[in-house]
Image (cartoon, rainbow over all chains, first blue to last red; front, side, top):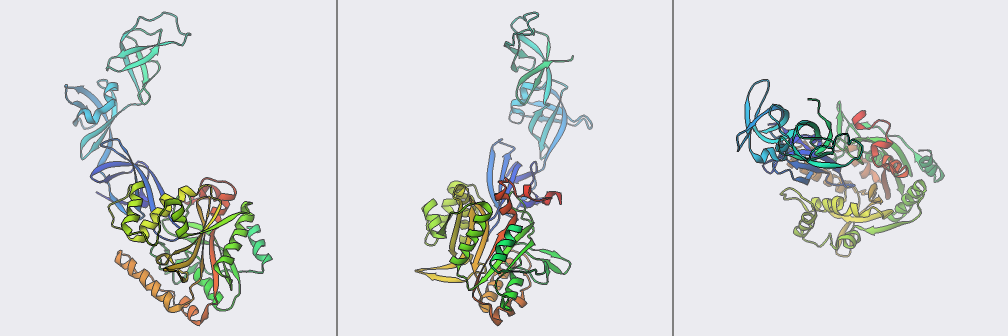
Length: 189
Length: 292
């Protein structure tokens, strides 16, 4: 794996720090009038999700992390693992609950999502920004009530619970922004 | 620029120009010069200007580009503009007063304060930089920031304290001159015995925490200068970098006699950013590093 010097640190670069793969968020160069220059670096530990502020001497090197983001299709959950497939190669990967995390509530079978691989095994799963899911449980819809602006909780096919407008009923498809968990509108299908 | 030139014209300080591409460069291990063909892009016009001073130029100033590899950030650009001037016969206090007058005029601020390096650290961190054990300096740093395992030199811990712990606290302090640095951070300044401590006759100007200028009561002892160059080169070699050629012409000039003088280098891009209240240095440049 390549090594990277502090002046090559850019947002998004994946490096190893103390044995954990990290993604660089920000890199700030600081230097006293005369003397040693430093880089104040903000990183996200990809294993724990924790944000790390760390200072390096300018010119120090970190090893690159074997981390790749891949577009994959979500296949199924076997009760313990979530299974994904690379559409071009048909190669399959299984991810545990730790890697899937909160993404689990948005994963519908055959949907596309992004799987982050570290040393060829899933480290994290990011759902598409917008997903369309079916309402499986909610209070009866109020026909014609599109103006009052009220909302109610609805349980979706993946188990997620979101707030939806009062006029929607079970069996309807809604579009959700997975980054905020907010209702965006009715789905197309 | 016109304002800066008028300031020196009124004081009969001569404007000079010296080569940007020269056959020697700085040995300072903390400055990375850029090589260009078989010459070096100058990291400051200091050496050439001292050769003029040794040839009895009298007081001189220069506004020029300077180049330092790798220094890119919110207040750094690898190609930048320096204002550098030298005052034969000036003690450090007189030069501080002149810098305060110039900067005060550009930024429309009159007041300034002067603290020693020691007073600064005592005031803000209750730490004596001269007597504290290296372990104490390290513990002070580690209490506030995350840093690698080390070990580091005393000066590196002090530099971390200055840049990470102190500078952020200086936001509202206006014009603050810090003087009398540890002897190990003398660069090209003379040393003075101050009670029990050996201090460097050097100052830095901070404006609301932004480091703007760096001045010396200039070292004019050729043998001492050569020894410092060689020590720098030893540090570079120990780090696995190439030793740099010594500027023999500067050493010859010092040997022939540099008048007692004080000199200062001031970052013109930073001065502009402060005057115009720009958050980033790049905002005051026509085309910053990433676009040049």
